[in-house]
Picture 1 (cartoon, one colour):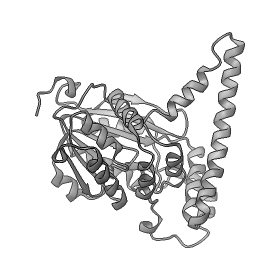
Picture 2 (cartoon, rainbow, N blue to C red; picture 1 turned 30 degrees about the horizontal axis):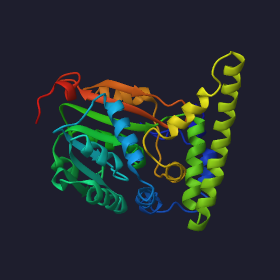
Picture 3 (cartoon, rainbow, N blue to C red; picture 1 turned 90 degrees about the vertical axis):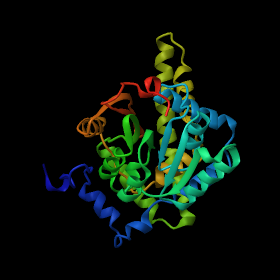
Length: 319
């Protein structure tokens, strides 16, 4: 393999020299200063939150976990972001603990708890990090550990997942969503995100619109082509469009805030599904559910500790 495309190390993605040169136009800033302001983005999202979005998020969690409720289950939202899925777990009956490293995200979860919870004792909100082993150890174990789209933004993805495993109780579930590794397409996104980080704040919205327009036009052209092919085959040509709409509304999120998160989200790591599977298998977990992405989105995983029932939420005794 040419040196220019050699792996950066175990569990990391390739970084072509051309990308590195473009990204290193100035001295590398301190990593703490280059992290994306996730919490500020999610605070804006909360202004758009309504019952329809909350219901969509709740239903997406039920589908992914394969359950009707989380009654009396201990639920850890590791990297709670907007707090929407902590709220969903609360409404499904769980005893919820949320944490995030971003103070604004912690504020988002606290706001949702104040707005929607009748029993605030069932929802604890903390400030903490996936990379802080002492913090995670002190929290103990949970029936469900939910880490959707978080570990790949820590800058230490594999060690963060490894740390989080300790919080999954025997027979418990671990939910992960990790950016799909698309090889050189992922490297291009690495550059897109790095440019965002180097832009002044007033230029960033325009940059997000530009990147979003390109991705929208690409998706639109593929959807139109799929519709035409279905029409030629005497099948319903609207199905590709309804699928597109359904995907954008699947988790109760907001198009603009999702786009800002995707374009600006940094640090940024990716992994192939089989890498995640092997990593978890070697640590005593069994894959229970897998939803793969055909594009640049996240692959979703539900793992279960194998020393208990194969479906703990349906068969375990109430805690």
